[in-house]
Image 1 (cartoon, rainbow, N blue to C red):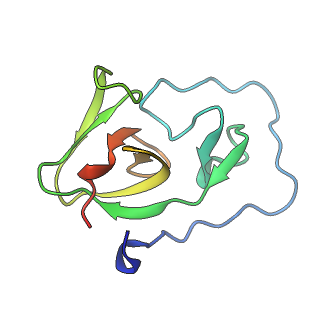
Image 2 (image 1 turned 135 degrees about the horizontal axis):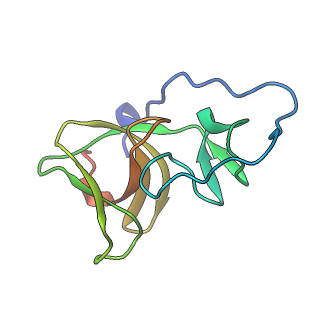
Image 3 (image 1 turned 90 degrees about the vertical axis):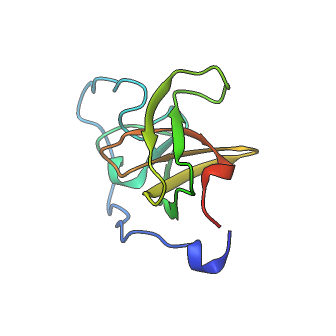
Length: 117
């Protein structure tokens, strides 16, 4: 990723002690940017995760990107992001990224080659 592509929205890190006040319904796959190990920083204090991430803004390349439920090639497609769409990247692992349109979703896994340089 080049320096010009490394942008973030201005999400604020919550202050004080974070805690949940009761049960929270687990969202359906592909909706909120929430996994057991990671969540979007905007979900801190609302959903519990081991780590919260301030996303990096990237653009979807020509051809768009299928957004998948998991990192298998035969995974169900949650949605499709068109070329030129600004997304928030939360995790990169090998040829896969996990990202979203924003803290309200949708979210999912995309092939890293679907990002513009």
